[in-house]
Length: 192
View 1 (tube, rainbow, N blue to C red):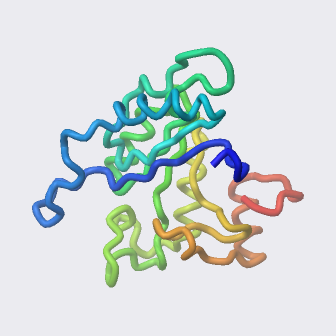
View 2 (cartoon, rainbow, N blue to C red; view 1 turned 90 degrees about the vertical axis):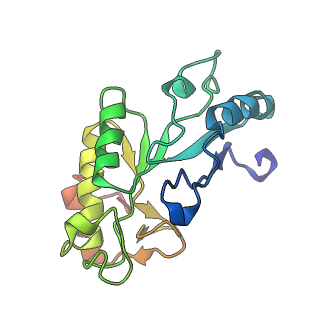
């Protein structure tokens, strides 16, 4: 990773699925904390940081973000990164990080304003009728107001819609203007 110019590694997970049809994956005895602590010295030796996708906060331990040494690479995780799938878990994220900030929230705004009529989007069902860009802007505003960051734009001028990041939507000039205005960004910035 370092030889390719990356500053770290992002470990992706699927969280935990408690419903019977998902077979309780991953194993409930899996220790994300143990894995991250074991990987930390190996990565630090190579000058790399790490993050992990804590789905709905599963596996998160606040001690992972505490300094364990000196320098820019002194935390087990560089920053907390949560993928959130329900309003309750969104509230849990803000409750955990609003006082300390520095975390990243990914909560996908969906493919269209129907949010569940065809493809169930549990994170947006309560927002049926609201366009995905408007949801993304609202979530960005709330997350930034709490001192954190929201995953919204990737691959240039495209906004995230679902967990498969290549399935982004190009932002028109009108959409960019709307986002810049709502997020109070300076006019010179090309992306929100």
